[in-house]
Image (cartoon, rainbow, N blue to C red; front, side, top):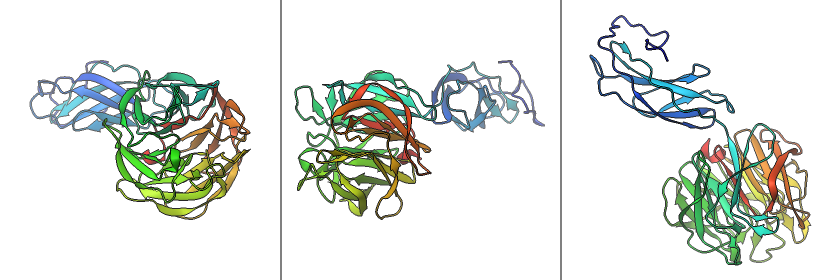
Length: 402
């Protein structure tokens, strides 16, 4: 970068002898069409206090401004690599630019972890970018191979909980991965009890895991940015496992699942909680089909439920609800396959279904997608790295984060 005032800035008081020194660049972290840029303020602030700091993107020339580190730069193009330089401004004008940051690529990703992979339980987490069809790539591994997990996420962390391990024991383990880096999972803490097939949902702060094996009604919550054991939140209206979970920033919704009365037949129950409180769930309405082993995801407005089964009959149905209201689900369209035990993840625009057990018999590696604001049948998206079922999905831009 040239050692000159940033383009377009010359004030009536401009005096290069009293300008601040350049900040020291830190790291840039990619988000959804955005990046967060850290820096260290200069020791020499010049002839007056620094009033603001700004970061400039290359390419694009997009600028973000803040009073201190970090600086958020928005309006970036997902899938494009960017670097950033920072400058400081006081009454006398701007500093020189800092050195450039490392390159980062904003994007929105779906993450699918755990499950049965080719018949064996796996710790694998796979990743796929929204918006462009294509196959998944390996992201890293959870701390333990297990199937029938639940998942939720913030913009920076993906969290997987519960499941059944290679010894066929139900576990209460909670793992997390750092979504911006990839690599292995880390131990987060424990659920209040060991369980399989809990339904996960979250906003940017809190993750919820509802129901699970033994048709429990228990809902646990965690604070995603920390670590530690889960805390009791309340209960579902009916104890069940294999439900689908999704969220807006304020509500978590849990759909379907196997009840204690008839786990294989499933239920059509939809209920909801207010995420930032605690307490028992409230009835929302009904699914069209009573089913278990479904998956669900959402943007901030609309939640969708995929697939499932009743006894040995598999479904390819897609149903949707408006999260801020209550009422029965509406038909959206069909998946390309009849799949219980699939996983799902969403951005503000798209929802992806991954894997599952076709016709309740054979695992698949197929992924489908839909556009959430419309209705209609799903379209092929690409393939997982292996045939996978009984896994769980999350994303860094789902409805609870919007």
